[in-house]
Every structure is written in structure tokens, then in C-alpha cells.
Image 1: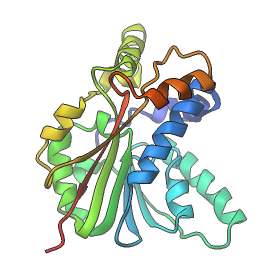
Image 2 (image 1 turned 60 degrees about the vertical axis):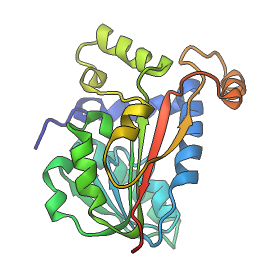
Image 3 (image 1 turned 60 degrees about the horizontal axis):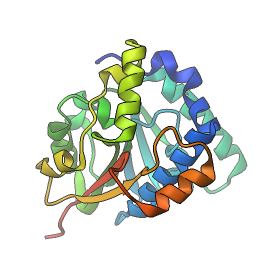
Length: 232
């Protein structure tokens, strides 16, 4: 198994969502991702579940989730988050947790109605090859959807500066791709692209961020790409 980059930062990972910038960024990214993810059935594979930020949404939407992550520390936090939801909700499906490196398990996967991943493929070597294998695990009509921090944006520069200032930062190991690069990947048909995070990281308030976001000017800081398997 490759190095679990996020193990050392797991305990403080969710603190980002408690900041004003983190909260509004999550808001716009989540709105885009949730609006684009449509499957023909309930069986979903989530890659890079992290601390369960999206796992919890998938479960509450009624999906039957297999959640994969290379970081045992992140997954432990996700399990706690989902356990709390299960205690308070009678109609949730249990998650199948799989501590693994996605690059090492494609041949062990079942077939799925949907494959979902948010901010994970920046850290996956040769993402195009991995996504090709994952696409082959979709049922007819199923969708493969990933969300990525976009290259050539104010946000990619923000994370690059973080990596320069902190060489041990996880972002020192990230590869950030532009929309054009993602569209060039030969996954399965053409990609449907969604864009968000048009406000810069130095925005001062939530209201200012949402005002800039509404104008949709300049390069997006976040891209969601979706490929759908044709029904033959």
C-alpha cells in the first residue's frame, strides 16, 4: 500500500470546515457535486471517503455505500461520524468500510451504479489509468464522478504556496489538473464538467464569496467531472 498522506493530519482535517472560508467553499462544492451525481440504482463506491463528509450525505440519500480510503486515521473518524448518524436515524444503510489503496484493488471491485470521489484524485498516481479501470466497474447507465481542485486557478496557487511554505504539507504531493486536461482523459465517452469556486482564497466574508461566485468570472478553483456508461 502506498503512503497514507493524510494520517498525520486526520485529527485536524475537519477544522477547515469550521472556518468561514472552509464553510463557504464546502457549500458551493457540495451543491455542485450533489446536483450532478445521479445513478440508476443505489449501489455506490466512494473513493477517498476521508472523514466521511460526503459518506454521510450518500447514506442519508439512501445509497448503499462501499467507502474506500488509504488512510486508516481518516476512516476511523468517518466511522465515528456515521455511527452518530445511525444512532439518530432509523432508515440508514450501513457502510461497508474498505481500508485500501484504490490503485491496488480495481480487480477486487464489484460493479456499481455510481462511483463517487471528492478531492482524492489529486493524490492518485496516473489518475487516467485508474479511472479507466473504475469506469469498467460501472453498471450500464452508471456514472463515475470526481471532484478536483482545479489547476491554473487562484486556489491551485494557494495550495502551491502552502506546499512551498510547508514542504511536509499533503499538497506538496498533489497534482492539480485543469478542466482541459481532465477532458482529454480517455475514460469513457466525453466528460460532463461542472465548475465552481470562482471566488479567491483571500475573500473576506461569506457574503462577498457568494456574490463573486454568482458572477462566475475567471478560472474556477474546483471542477467536477462525470462520465456515464452508455446503456447498450
